[in-house]
Length: 93
Image (tube, rainbow, N blue to C red; front, top):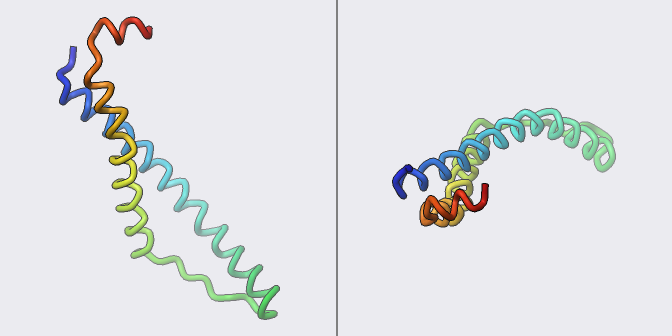
């Protein structure tokens, strides 16, 4: 059996990993969708396409936000999982 701290770290790392995967897919989708929206909104409202700028700083800011939220979102489930006994875990299997 793993120690309580090990279980806590494992669950939090898994949560952060899932958050990072979602950030990568979100970043890949943001570029084409953002450019399309800039073109469409500009054409409808201003009769010309708006310039689209993809900011590296914005990308980094969202990375930090995703990691912080992933840690916060996974802490309570991780803490609860770390408090389970082996008997309780096996009962769920």
